[in-house]
Image 1 (cartoon, rainbow, N blue to C red):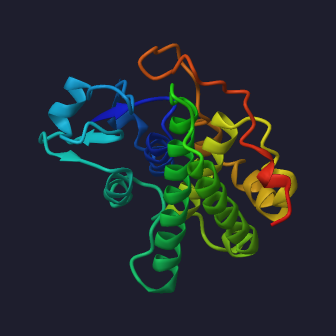
Image 2 (cartoon, helix red, strand yellow):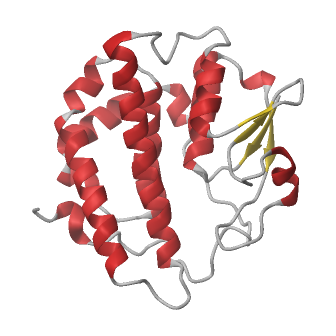
Image 3 (spheres, rainbow, N blue to C red):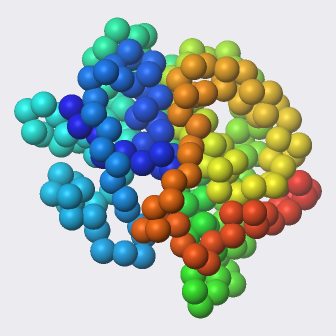
Length: 228
């Protein structure tokens, strides 16, 4: 199989964690595929995925799968590792709900970062909207940290880990751990897994992805340590 891959993408990271957990890393060739929001689609990638988005998995029979949720569920049916999505019942829908929450948080963070790179400046309403959504999501995860801790490791945990990883990777000095201590304790424990340690986001020098106007040291603003 071939995976269109980037060391920066939180959604690619989800797939890489699943491959690690299922013992399938040696069955996939990772192809570095550069994408950028404000650029024409990567032609090679678009041949396999008309949306031109990461991740995209090309199967041995040349069928293609996208997005990360579809790829992860497919891979979960293969390999030797334990199932990451229960077949039925409350446990299944808890994992799907957490995955949707983590993916949604990641989407907001990616859009926020894109706004920070806007050459004409950030639209005034957007930071307030992003702040409200991120604050509310983090507060919910803080309340559910105990449930995350007691549930078997699954796709929901992976989605949340990747969202928090994006927060650490792209919004430095945000201090979310101080604001949400129970979530931070859960994150520290789950991050001891080899699959998570091995997939920490990494930067690379691709100019097609790194915007000259983006300052990675710019705080996400002070909302994570402010009181609602």
